[in-house]
Amino acid sequence: YGARHRAEKLAVFAGALDSDNAQRLTLMNDLRRAIDSDELLLMFQPKLRMHARQVSGVEALVRWKHPERGLLGPDQFIGFAENAGLITRLTYWVLAAAVRESHAWHGAGHAVPIAINLSSHDIRDRQLFEQISRALETWGGAPDWIQFELTESCIMEDLSIARQVLTQLREAGFKLFIDDFGTGYSSLAYLRHLPVDYIKIDQSFVKDLDSDRESAAIVEAIIKLAHSLGIAVVAEGVESVSTMEMLSNWGCEEAQGYCISKPISGRDFQSWNKAFV
Ligand code: C2E
Ligand code: MG
Ligand code: MG
Ligand code: MG
Image (cartoon, rainbow, N blue to C red; front, side, top):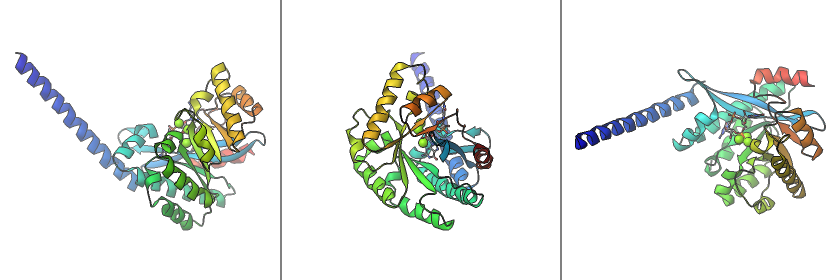
């Protein structure tokens, strides 16, 4: 009985593995198709310059309109795209879509920069810079059309490559953001040598700012530190007016979060922006 039972268990296990692999393969083909067809779409979430009450830019957040699984968020496929070697193509798609959108917005009087999230694979992509230039050329765009966000952990994964890429992008005139700041690394000394314009404080510290004294202390300290290094600050995940007021009192320049706007379609952003002013 024991041996048979074990064999059955093994068979079940192997079957599960097979179906895992099969699923992965299907998902990979699906994603490859999605990038080439129009199954991906961008949503845009505004960032607010608090003291001027001005929209400073938007962040492009990718979604996948999967024919069977419905609308998928980036957390459901970005990691997979990275492992499957598809992230570079996905980034090119995002880049092209964002610049095309920006062209439409400029034509309609919305000169608002669009920030794009880069993954750690992208900074090792030798063709990234050329792809960016080409996307802008296609639509007659300039470096103030798009901005780039890199997570703190992506930068720390390979600090020297990150610094090279950041330097090249910044010298070309692009604004740069360190995303999810506060989650990636315990020492802040590395910030001194990074050519960035903004840090974005991770939403885990911001969310409960108005009710949690430890979060408040951390956020206030991060803002001070950034300013002492000549770096401006965006808080992400701002969900209440009281949080926004605290941030503003501490001199935090910009805020982004559900309290201002959820991510919305490009068309909705244009009406939102018109109504906002
Ligand atoms: P992120 O860049 O830190 O983006 C912020 C995420 O927080 C977004 O989730 C946004 O919808 C959500 N968010 C914004 N404001 C609030 C708020 O007030 N409260 C709460 N609870 N959440 C808020 P989303 O769109 O699911 O994106 C998740 C992550 O996926 C992003 O984190 C980013 O790292 C990654 N991502 C999104 N688009 C792309 C892309 O085109 N390329 C790459 N490589 N990564 C992307
Ligand atoms: Mg981001
Ligand atoms: Mg973030
Ligand atoms: Mg995040």
